[in-house]
Length: 122
Image (cartoon, rainbow, N blue to C red; front, side, top):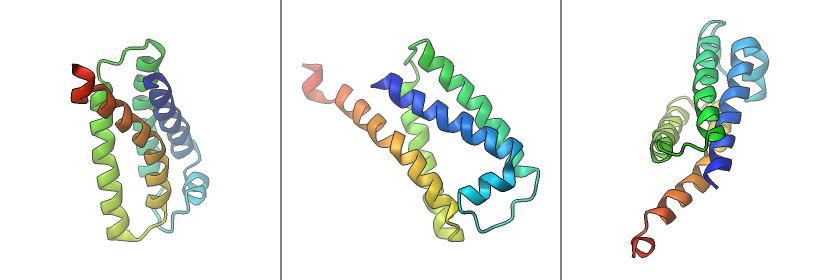
């Protein structure tokens, strides 16, 4: 299950990153954004998404789950921050991003809770 949740994370980071980096207007419209972010910032965000997605893809491919719990913690922060941005701006972009992140976050959270539950440790 860890492999699949990390693969999903890597997939949306890489694919979304490519979209933001090379087709920012199209990607923002597909994600239902109602704001203008200029031409440069979506590309910068896309670059970082691709880089991070590559790291996560290598972790998944190597079945190195050393930092799996951190990936769940990082997505916890991302979900909270995306919710904050949605409340602040009302931009539907943040609903789309929240759904994309939550689809992979919830199974990952289940894996971590199940793995570190007291009953499992006995």
